[in-house]
Image (cartoon, rainbow, N blue to C red; front, top):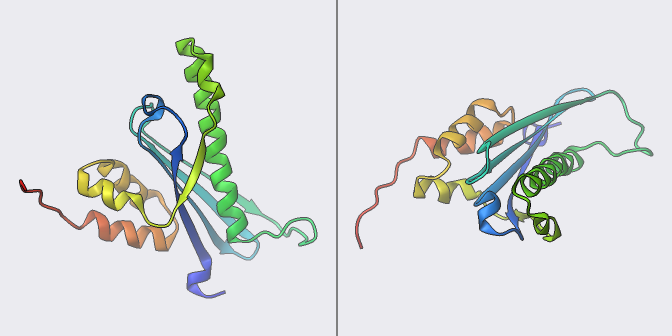
Amino acid sequence: MSKSDTCKYATYRLAGLPAGVFGETYVIAAAMAEGTNVYRCEYFLLTKRDEPHFLHEAFTFEGDVPEELLKLDLDYLVGESRQQAENYLSERLFQIAEKKGRPNLLEYRYELVEMPYMPLHGCWMRGEFMEETRKIVEATRCGQLKRYLSLLVRSSFTRRPG
């Protein structure tokens, strides 16, 4: 397995909910091969309006799974990380709807939409999710993600009037 085959990540934005529930929300799902039959999955959830504004969850798959039962690879594991983030969002939305007495929130069809680019770059330029981005750099074990975001946090942008 080459170095580039040991890690994979994807970024998503939350779509389909009123902006007041979570606000601008992104998920980064990652998977890493850490050894023979050992994989780590992680996701990072960043949200503007809900508490917590930043959530990091990680889990490990160990063991030899017969391929006829499950093809355990990085694509599958990125998808599993995404699913874990969706599960969290579903549970959190239920809690918010219950707490605010707004059961209509549960009628919305929302989804995590994969993004073809890293949304945190634009956020960084706007001064959003800066501390959260730094936390991802510290926490992730995905080398590609760590390198990309490390370069981002070392960059600076100057805003000037038109």
